[in-house]
Image (cartoon, rainbow, N blue to C red; front, side, top):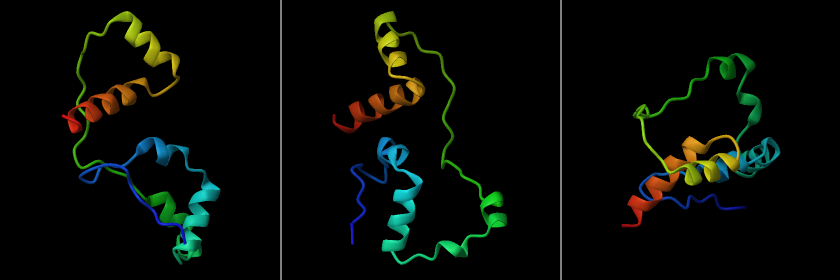
Length: 93
């Protein structure tokens, strides 16, 4: 059985790894863990809600154009990458 681990500290999750996980991998992991996938009905999935313990704040920040260009060049989610970069910086101080 494959052990599921998180590389993050203090309950933080490696979101890039989560985003990269395919549906087939999730189903395989659930089978390995012994979970019954049939327990979730379409109605339960429709009603399921996600939440964040504390919502993100909207701010305005000024960045150098070349930094912003590089972040945007990596595709959608550049604001999330900025957040991840800042979180990583402060977690390693």
